[in-house]
Image (cartoon, rainbow, N blue to C red):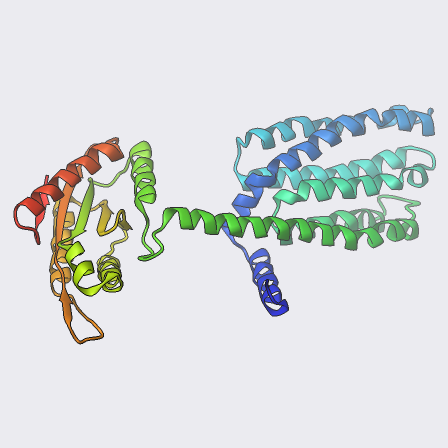
Length: 369
């Protein structure tokens, strides 16, 4: 059970994530919640035009004047469809959403201006708009979402202060809206914080499913994903190479020194791979004593990388608690391909064959196919 101090530390961490500009989190939050914005827009588009019947009931004489303004809300239908289909970028959709909703407030004020006693009868309509903002703003980052809500509440005040809305009941509006604003902001934060908790858990689970806990390197699943992604989307780089690396006589290390020192050999090799890692390559642990490097260097550069790994491994010495020295070597199979669409199975099979040959030829060497 978590202590109060750990709970507070978790809350502070989540708060820092929510308040800072984290593009990956913002994109994930948008993708997860954009359908709520679509629902809000469709609700607005379907309800606000039909509320012309309210205009007709309140002021039959001037209700005809509000028809063009009510028609504005129909723009929510194509915008809602755009959110559902996600044809445009997140920034474009959010800009259109904010512009439409702020415009909706101004249009609503214009509707109330056309009607006798419109501000009195239509005051509760602003509360409806606040509920819409809670629903729609879920796809926004926390600070922009809260800022949008505050601006939306301020807008009628500013509109009236500029002399564009005579007889606007500031006191009644303030009592109605500003008390609800605090609850709205707390609700927006609570929704975002709840999503962040789930996002962080899913991120940890995803990392655990794609990484080896002992070495910290990507696992076989991650290797397959990366290679299939590269094959699917192609690459402008000259070639891709797969190196499969196996610790020679690993069972003998375990049998003589114990599994602890076998793990030490594994972590030592992982450190070697990370030391020679290149921006155009990635390292993985794909089995017990088997590792891999996916490289987008030229075949010659990949071969030099393989030889560098072999030499560093051969020079590594591990000391036991009994002052015994453990050394190990590695065998490496390397397969390169200039075909951007060559899949995981084909390239892996060729690299595995090369590794098999390296072992048959006496180990502690690199074989290229």
